[in-house]
Length: 400
Image 1 (cartoon, rainbow, N blue to C red):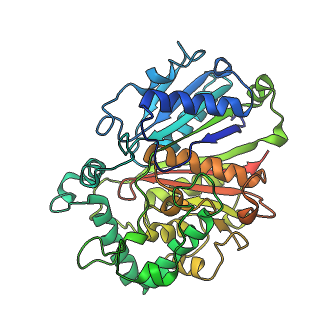
Image 2 (image 1 turned 180 degrees about the horizontal axis):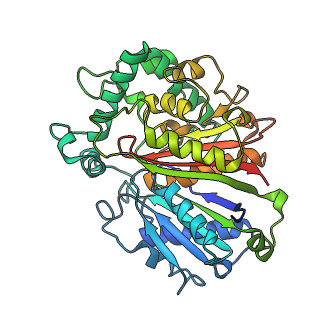
């Protein structure tokens, strides 16, 4: 199997892209990451792009054709992928697979989402409805905001099963907002919250579903944004003029999908997520104890806890305690979501998985903001999910 390296990473500021059109988003992502290493798009052999709401919110299909409009990418093997909130991670795996098949030595993975209008406003009910399409039809009935409702149920189940409090889960959000302060690309980097604010029901902080524990501050953001990475084999690095020491190796990866229906399966210990993560560790020759940097898919605080367990940093039911004990802090045992996570960095659905990998690479290259930089970044894990803990894409990165 060929070694695969991440040669460059670029992202927009997450939040509002205002009147930027989808064609402009795609070209900006590609041209932006190419500028990072002063490489023309023509130097890229293959590509993939991930998005989730391009049809429903943007009325745009055939995203690969938009990639091909960038000079130098025409007539090349490009494709669009959709795997709900794991679309970005899937785009990265799509490029890796193309490189492994010998379709080229260099490739680009792009992820984006445009969820707000040209004035930066969002239609909350519409966004809730279209995101709900990524759930099982019978489990949408009676739910205005489908995914917050589904994860409010997961949160209640997690709390009951493991005797975890709302306060413990709220602390995950507080710590992520504290990290996002130092990420210039984070949507909420101008906002800080205390644990008291995260717990108090007033102002914007309310229970999302009556009778269930999920509050506004437990939720990720509705976000516009794009992200892109350039991946390459050893031969590809040479063609791009990149030195190994300036790159990271995508040393392991795994992908697995559980049944879409949430009911009837153990969402607190999602089989596909554990399988994908373990596969990535096995491929990389790395154990969870070797990892001290991670980005996990905290679409809601309960997933910050479950994600900590999936990457092997805590036993089932102990993920929230890992955060509360300071072990997930930038100077903790394993720095998790130093980017601010989806809760404070933002969650532009199709870009999320790409951005996780890009930020983890920045940590390993010691290019993260000083205040959240892990001093001895040895290896990184990423865990990107789609749907009701259904689709899982996991990676393990190492210094090249």
